[in-house]
Image (tube, rainbow, N blue to C red; front, side):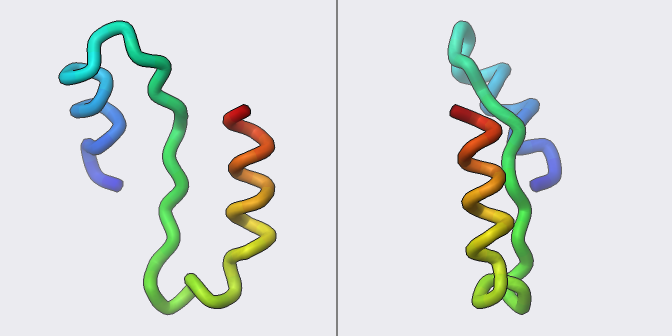
Amino acid sequence: MGGSERDLKKICKGADVKKGLSIHGTEAAQSRSKVEAWVKNIV
């Protein structure tokens, strides 16, 4: 994710930028539960 969150907060002033989720390509096929948990935490 690098500085993506920081950059978005800077560019999109006033936006509610949530913590991102980083999934590497090799993990993508096994990440459904990780993504579902992340979505529940950002809503």
